[in-house]
Image 1 (tube, rainbow, N blue to C red):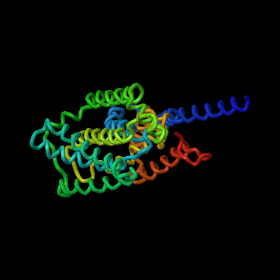
Image 2 (image 1 turned 90 degrees about the vertical axis):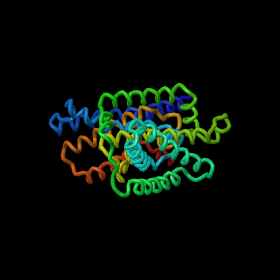
Image 3 (image 1 turned 45 degrees about the horizontal axis):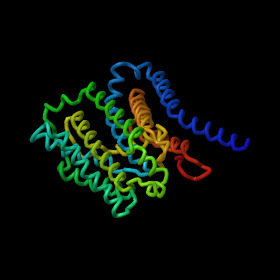
Image 4 (image 1 turned 180 degrees about the vertical axis):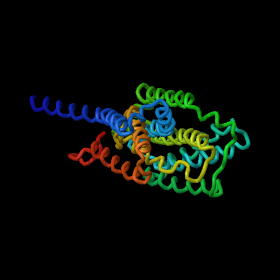
Length: 317
């Protein structure tokens, strides 16, 4: 009895430590860069810049949580942002108000293809999405003729800090509600905890997997649109490494890559803020962009190591 209580206490304390590590990391990152940048980090002007930088990342990370919670991955998010941005730019030249819905619908279409190939053809998710990454990047180059597609000036009004803040709050609150208080979230976490058990419990596993990829891709369409209006155009490199940044953000936030019951939307939010502040802090500190990529890779390895169950040789669920 005493051994059981001791083991239970040990597991509980270990889980608690893993939960607070992302919060502590975020606070330490803020304090560090506030000091080394001489107070620039938390200035009002720079906070607006951080919001603009983290907006797309946060939306993408929150949407991707519905895939990762099921124990799956989506490596096509960057190229999804690219193709939807280029297509939205072309549509905007004909009818500007249709640019956003067009981008999201195109993303939804390719997301459903991802899900169907994974579910119906039984191809591993990382193979499907890596293949889609290359296919969509090729399509983006073809549609943009290897260059860029400009957007009308009327769409520049969408690059508004207040609007982005409203949208990101709405996305986060909607995701938290769906994740915690509806069957969608419960089913996603059930699949991540164990596919066989989820099947036996009546969870529509195949439909939920397709739903996850469709949702993620549709939100990539939203991200592509705002990338496009912020840059004033869409190019072949739009969305490059976006999937990598999303994955890093989720891991930094404490999201278990194996999915399951411990998956939480707050992981996406905290991780996105941490990564955005890191990138912004590096820029304020005049760190070379190529060196930043290397540092982010090291941070990713450390974050994965901290959430890795070495005893069971699997990611913590």
